Amino acid sequence: MNALANLYYTIHNALFPRLQYLDGLAPLALRLYLVPVFWMAGTQKISGIDSTIEWFGNPDWGLGLPFPTVMAYLAAYTEAIGALLLFIGLATRWISIPLMITMVVAALAVHWDNGWAAIADSSAQDVAARLGAAKDILREHGNYRWLTEKGNFVILNNGIEFAVTYFVMLLSLLFTGGGRFTSADYYLSKLFPNMA
Image (cartoon, rainbow, N blue to C red; front, side, top):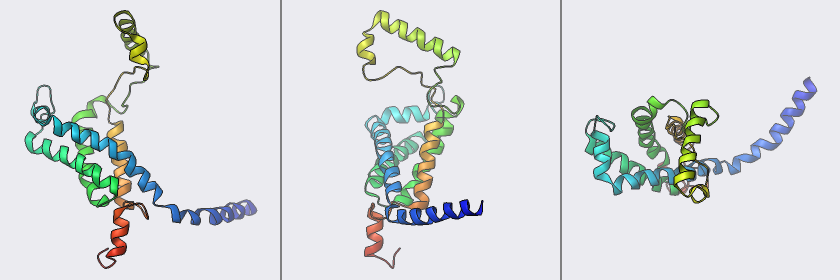
């Protein structure tokens, strides 16, 4: 058993310390994954800001949030500007905080009542029945082949899964920063070492 443990740690210590030179790739991957998510969300809110404000404020069919105008502008511009900052890796830790707050608000105000899953389990009997009925209607009254050539139909559950996933990714960036060799933050810390 001791020989096996020694072999494990020999391999471990020979391999993983070398990865430190590439440790900026993981934060880069997280940042680049999140960029289109927040860019699309933010720019869609901005382009339809009146509808966004109405949705944020309406208690009957919307979110019923207080100060909907302020909240809509804050969410929209945090997401859009946040996407740009994540893209270049500038102020990564700082922008992670308001983006995490938007994910908490989204999870609680929009997705919470729908449970965990973002997409409903199509193997569940009631979901499968609904999906089958929708497909039958589309086959009979629509061009089903054209409708499905880019992907299969699913039933959106709209649970908290994506909001929590993005929150966890942002939490990681809060602790790691933008990444060594892969972010503007890294190069600025080299230009201004006394400020870092």
